[in-house]
Structure formats: C-alpha cells, structure tokens
Amino acid sequence: MATDDNLSTALATGPLKVVGRLVDSSNNALVADLEVAGELRRVVYKPAAGERPLWDFPDGELGRREVAAFHLSASLGWDQVPLTVWRDEGPAGAGMCQLWIDGGTPDDYISLFAPAAVPADWLAILQGVDSVGAEVVLAHADVVELQRLAVFDYLANNADRKAGHLIVSEGDGIARLWAIDHGLTFHTEPKLRTVLWGFAGEELPRTIAIDIASFLERFGDFERSVSAHLPDEGLARVNARARELIEVGRFPAPRDDGPAVPWPIF
Image (cartoon, rainbow, N blue to C red):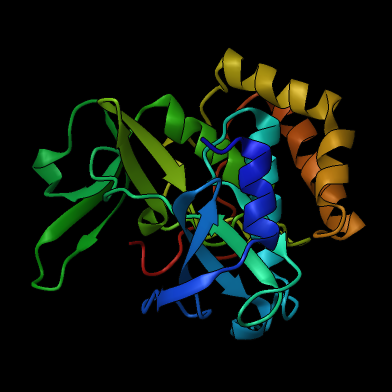
C-alpha cells in the first residue's frame, strides 16, 4: 500500500502511460496510468503546453493554480480536492498531475427540479427554463460538505464552480464529495462564480470559522507549499479573504459587478 508521500512522489516523477483524453476538456486533459508501490493508479495529467489561452489568466499557469487549490483544501483540513502535484517532466511536458477519482454525479448534493419538487431542506439558487420551455430550479443540499466548498471557493476566488466539477465516490458504504477543475482560481481581481450560493449571507458555522482561524495561524505553511505556483499578490489576497470571513462571520454573497454563476452551470 502506497503512503501519501509515496503517492505524491510518484505523481510528480513516475513514468506516465497516457491511455486517453478527457474529450470535454478545453485544456488537453489526458488520462494516464502510473505504477505506485506495485499498484496501478489512474491519474489526470494536464500539460501546460495544452492550456487554451485566456484573456484574464496568465498563459501556462492554470495547472499550477490547481496544485495550489489542493494545498488550500488540505491546509484547511477539509481534503475535498484530490491529491494534485506539479510535474517538471511528462509525456507532453511539464504540467499538473492529479489522482483520478472514480465516482458519479453529485445528484444528492445539487440538481435541477421542477419548482414544486425542490426538497424542503434544500436551498434554491436560481430559476429558469429548460430546452423545452419547462420551468426548472437549481438547488443544492444544506450540508457541511457544500458549506466548506462555498468557503473554499471564496478563498480560492474560484471563477468556475460548475455542478459538473463535483464528484461523489463511494467507499465502505460512505459517500464522499470531491471537487475538481480548479484552474480558474486565485486571480488577484474578484472573480467568484459558483453554483453554491445557497448559503449567501448566512452565519458561518462555528466549526468552519475555527478551521479558517487555524488556517490563518498556519498561513506560513500554506504559503511555503504554494510559493512556486502563486504570485505574492495572489497569496496576500487569500489571506485577506480569510481574515474578512472571520471578521464578517458570514458566507459571502454575490457581487453586483459581474456574473455570479458560471455557464454552463453543469
């Protein structure tokens, strides 16, 4: 059985055998196999050379932001982002390498409903019409896993939290929620676009506030873990957003100077 250190080292330096491509990805995300301690593990490998240029994010840095997102989630103690490392070498050059998560769609966490069918304990986000003109409501569950993700997305300034970027895995009969695709994060300008607005303006649970405060106390550790991937200004903005959350004590709300949700939402 591979340890976390073994797995991290293997993801960063081990030989990758590319076996496919994620066809819906706009950034040449490749699927590869990797042998770790005699066990075959599947990974997602995103070479920097395959990134599609964006007008508002620096070229060739999206994979580094995904690595930083993993460290942010780990530093908060929430571990909702799969193990993600930076590779200096790979079949298509330097890039991000992330442990593959076998799982399904997050229907028990976020979904579309007819207006009268939204579960009583779920939180409605927006209302619209589907492709045939029927009214639908996007809603998500009121659970701690999504509360943490809403805070994580704010701290990471995630510009692309689609519902399709959530995966549910099953192990020993227990469901676990994972978050992926964090290339559009850590911009120095406010960019938060998410489908997790159900908590907007609500008071932060005490346990989450404690986790944020602990993260701030150990911010130097996070800073050292991502210094090769994020500029100083980006790190300073993470710190400032964490301090603001502690001071205000409430979940962030949408701003009025740009779109609040990504498109498409799934």
